[in-house]
Length: 597
Image 1 (cartoon, helix red, strand yellow):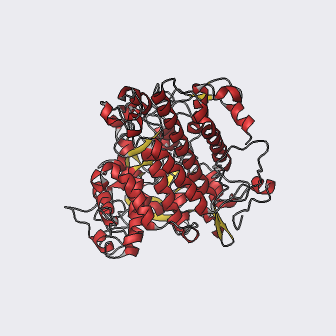
Image 2 (cartoon, helix red, strand yellow):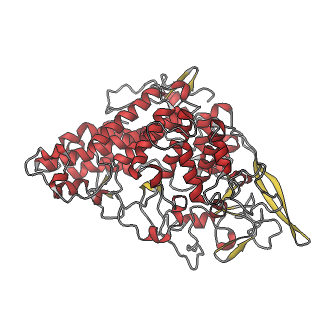
Image 3 (cartoon, one colour):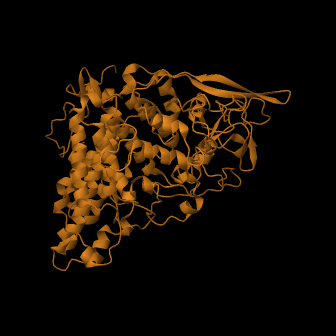
């Protein structure tokens, strides 16, 4: 994107104060290039664009393209993609245009940030400039990570990423760039993260004494904690900080060390484990795991009472909480989309039998294991408590209503009764608040917030990497192992009794069994948070597992459980790696396409 077009766009500006819950850009008229960086507010507007274009899927969407869910919205682009329509010119997962544009805005910002007069007071000028630069480096790393995850892939025997563009493109720029190696992109992310960490606090908090100032600011005459708090204080919570940057680095390392990419990078599982541990040190490791972290979306009083930018214990980074009733708002839309039809929802996301079968019994054993106690004639009895917390199945009581999903149902909640009915015999429960009411005549919204990063994801990243690096009980220099993490996660879920989890103990002596257990725990804990699509690909697992459902029938008062075929997937082997947009490849001769596309 050309510099003149970038500068002309500047329509987002913020004073970086928490006038709303979190960072909320406001609108300003476009300004010319020579004016933008003479005005601190206008310069901040370029940084504001990067916040406005954050890459996160904040609602559950992509799981319907995996073995975990289908949708009754038959026109969904994700469903069509899973059915075989995914091409380089039709890519619902593409991040190419948005991420590259955002990176270019950040390049412009970084090239000019030191020319901006942020304050006439020297120490405040340095603080403001450091804060701005640190955010820009962190945001650039985030955008590069999403480019790499979505578009990195093999071209012959080379693992390529994307062109590394860390400079301002202008009229004289050669845009016909070849792709840099995947490893070079990883190194660029690392470099930006390290630069950001040097400039940003680990978290935003208010100081109470000048002695607590960072050493570099103490060198300035008259520097004081009050001015520091203006720039780096608690009111800035919600902006990019050092902990978020460390999380980006840990996510990048796990991606690069995974089976789909490991042969083309220098990143090891040991490195990935240590980087995850660096994030988890913020909460003190396993002992700091949130005991209700797996139910973060159900903590109603906590959510309703969240102050400006404040994070619950489980959350590393989140978006604004919202209780709007508009279609685009977050306060009711998930319930409107996913409640069963008799509760005035559209039943969009339908968990699969494949997903339900992933939940172990409450004693910890997989349902197919000897000694599990599972009964196909009573399949929901004695299961992992998370099953009833994440999924509505036949007989679930929700909002004082019994949800009958079987084909014998007398109402529209039954299997395939109407367009808004379940296709699998299951409805989504995770992420939803039961005190919301999507009825158009009595609409009642409640606060929700989008989650960008959770500590549980990083605990699971550590467990995955640590098991591969040191085995189930190995801890490196971190003081806790993959076994310790998985034990804590399963205990808080209510698995086992009196601290006993015999299946986990069996896995603790076998790295391969522990690998499968960790992957299964990740599948459950991060379900419907847009992780499964990417996990299947980086692990190179089967993308085409037939999707199953459950038809419950009633014969002479007795319930019969019948597993049914619901939907087939149609992915090709090369689709472990996403495409470079076809239009870009056609436009630039040096831009190689990933193999197969």
